[in-house]
Image 1: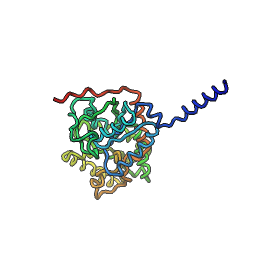
Image 2: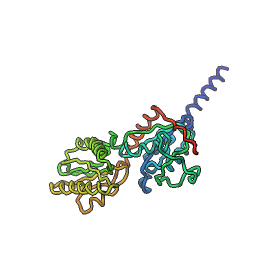
Image 3: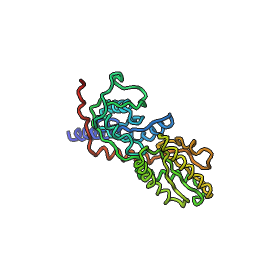
Image 4: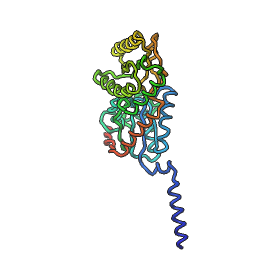
Length: 306
């Protein structure tokens, strides 16, 4: 009898120890929803590749679009179908201020979003890039990340890697870090200050002549005109000083509109944003771990339609 019991407990132990990660994840009601701007296939693929390691530990869905109700509804629906009831929302934006209030409205954590229009049906519109604002249907509770990539210490090493890969003689080179930038002047100053703190890692890494941060403020024509002039003046002055300019985009992915802005000027760049980099995945994982152990908020009861 002793031998039989011993064999039984060993077998049970082996079965428990061999539970696959996917089964273990289903038993935990926590999942991750990554919000990302989204763009073309390359942009989206690099975000998907970054999130792949997370899927070994958690159910993960990506909601492309700038806080679009359709995309968020689809991501939440897919997580709930996997048994997820607590959702950590990681907002993969440069600024922690971007789309925060709007996201809370769509998730039902803050008033301001109307009910979902009946025309959207059960699963919302396809594509998820329409920037619709309505309250999603969900039984989950949520915790939202607050830090943006501009304030992420993990991004300092990314800038260093980009700069050193393009550098040949730092004493005769300047580094220009370009970011999108917001409309509001005070917020723009916060963007610059946070990114400049990341740029300190570049200043420590090599004796570059100058390391400068500029924002294009590209969606606001009046602000953009002055920003373009400042950016071009920076590159032109460096050239007059005999310095080669290394341009690093502080964007989630890609070079954005900077090639057009810098047309006709002398500079070097590999065109890569913050992705691809293991540091972005490391930052996302840090957000996830903090959210998982923090407080979750359930949506307020939806108002009854009259």
